Image (cartoon, rainbow, N blue to C red; front, top):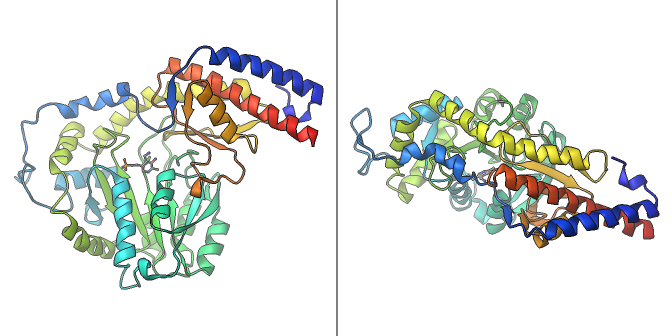
Length: 425
Ligand code: PMP
């Protein structure tokens, strides 16, 4: 397809008329679809229904009755399963409750109220800043906003956050206390950090002694097309002599049931000790019944990985549908660029600068709800008004076909309109 930016005004006006007509035709179909959040489809969560069958054994191997109080950091078999799955020593992890976001918020709160390793609590500091690789996960940014943490966007590269920028900033500003990372199949771009990026994060000099990496490995075992290996940050920190720098988070939200999964936080022995002391005041223990249910369902890490292959099979046609439409309708137009993720939950599309909000508005008017424009940036401010996150997992393939047809028309309609405005200047 021709590059729209190279068209004459007359050609653009013709193209606009064609896009307008297509849009009106699609609008008349009265679609009603939601692609705004990364939720698995009902047919996908069905695959974990085995977990809902009646439990006949409610004791752990060591004889602990999971129906009663006991253990703060998780039942041994759940720790073993996570340990094997993520290659983390079982002593370095705590099994949490139903969601990892909760553990992330709590980790941040502990730093604000108690501080880390004898350092001043962040809540007593004039200013606390965090590096936010962007586009990124909106709920990380909401945690910062809620606690008054100033967010500094850092551009993403194909290998993870731009490490020249990260090193420069964290090495020179003591009030920069940490960074958010989604190292594998990142939300929203599906980027996997290179070993070099992981090593640089672990070994860089930081002006703050209590600099913390929030390593949110939410999509750590979620391949769709290819299982990519990402270096473990805890190992990298150990090698670099910065073992207290990283908190590692994970959950089974996108494995079994979102909102009813099992989460974990892992870190150095010292950090784990510090966390447990405060966590022990917060709870007697998390939901061990759910932990045992997960262990009984998967048996071991291998069982969980096999389950992820089944889920990849559910998601593959959906990702293929999104990519097929983008390629067919937008390749060569100069109106959009996108990532081709190997796994995870999203496809990230950068539309023509200044058009993301308009694309969301047009899609909504025609019955398709997209993630809000700007949501992938701190303070919801995308400086280019360009990034959009497509969440293809919830709709059926048939619904996605319709939604993507509309999406591409909206991208064209908004982009051509913007180009016409620019030719008028
Ligand atoms: N982190 C990332 C990067 C996510 O995309 C999500 C879910 N959308 C979460 C965390 C939430 O995980 P949980 O359900 O374990 O809180």
